[in-house]
Length: 223
Image 1 (cartoon, helix red, strand yellow):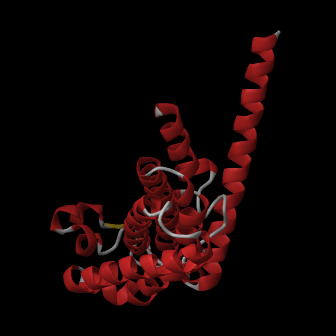
Image 2 (cartoon, one colour; image 1 turned 180 degrees about the vertical axis):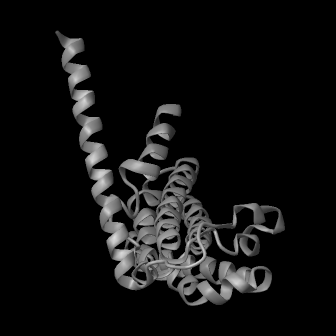
């Protein structure tokens, strides 16, 4: 069981990362990552929906017939997104004004429906919970990384307005690197594609080197 959970966590965070490996949910990855705070907020909202959706789908997997499972999953996800949308509007209104439109679009986030169909509907609730949490955190890390790079190069800040998302105790995360002279391209849509491309290339290069190192170690051990 521990080995299974370790594999699920590794897949969600790195090997099968929603953005960097599956290339899913690129709309929010491109649209809301003008800052690390926005990326973090969107990622956490998506993680909450993904975890609860996975667990609920796993619980009803033997009740819902195959013929209607997709519509049922969509209605379930839409209900959860509505709750998250209302919660953000009530308690994190400033962040909601930035992410409001894209929170609603979580309903059609293929990563959530994909995990519900490919994993949660075929596994027990505990495994589904771990998978949802790992995939959600991997998605959050991807969006936050993209957002931080774009924010740093485009605005000269890191985690701007983080206190609005995490509370006043996290105001220390808000860093001003330089006053002006940022690259406007980085906070525009083309900048998002450029940053994503470089991150994808970096991940592929790192994976290739790690696989080569593992192969060399394995060959040495077998001789």
